[in-house]
Length: 173
Image (cartoon, rainbow, N blue to C red; front, top):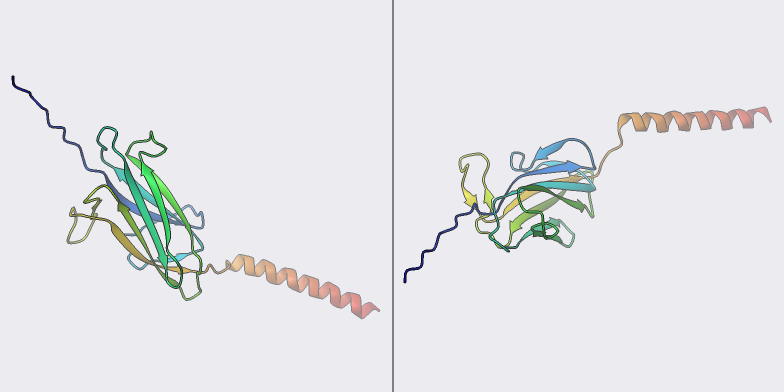
């Protein structure tokens, strides 16, 4: 008796196109294309595109490690398929609050790794474009946000108005 087995070929589970959103703003920035990027903190959201195919009943885990100089690592894990039913492709949003942003910028590193997939990241550009590697780390600087000029103007004019009113009150007496 002869058994015939068909080989199932599936695209490996990969992540790519890691982008960052700062303080809930509308713009995103690709981290791979901007190494050492200065980000306005404290709230950072990373968008991670996950593609590929899991084997039947297969599970993987995206491990995200955020390390800021002078602070303990912040580690988050996400099971794939998401919520037990959402299979790739999808974009996952990972949010982190910077513990110590500074005006000069605090060095930080964020690392993404699909634990059960190796390799799990395709290099999107540069001399090694298309090469597959296991995990990807990005170095960033987290900067404390500086108020907008408009906010400072409103604060200044409000303070001048209060000062003038108090001055008139005390001059009349």
